[in-house]
Length: 76
Image (cartoon, rainbow, N blue to C red; front, top):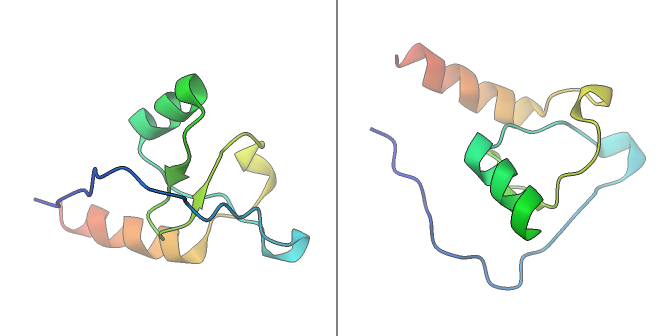
């Protein structure tokens, strides 16, 4: 079973990236909900920390998140 780090993040580095470097990321659903309620940053599978709020379907999927998700799905 995969272990998830649930420690709070102190002073996260929030990054929207450049227009040429924007991706949609895979994040746990409960983290998205918590972020929407509390305004806390989320951590994507690739490690990116940010406050979601943009339309994820407008951007391509992050290649690192996509590879990690593929690995997890192949283990099931």
